Image (cartoon, rainbow, N blue to C red; front, side, top):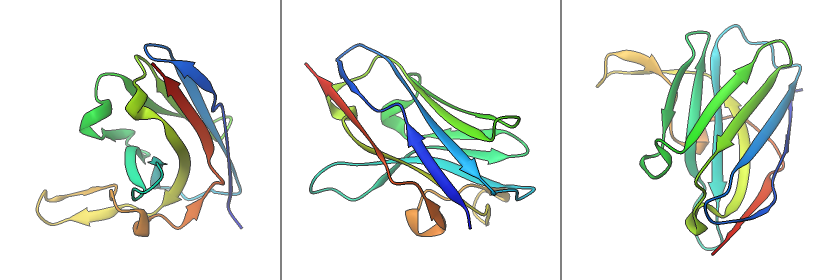
Length: 132
């Protein structure tokens, strides 16, 4: 059974930085997608960033482009999300997720889905609170 454990959530002021970590146990797929999602009260869980491996192709929600960086440490089996220039709207519970890649017919290539339904394994979430 795949287990994902997030850590690193905290309360920070706007403009600050945080790094979230997601330790994955037993997830040894040779290729796949890892992602960070966030959820705020009253809203659906939305994708923040995805990492397609082994190519190492990343994608980001428009609202975090240029501020967040998703990365993976193979040796430590850990996924990271470096978050800089945090905004109040970045607040929420951040979830780490894992799942298979999908072939995007429109784009003509394999990529990570942005739909939470396509990610089969989830962590318990870590709270990020950004205050003004």
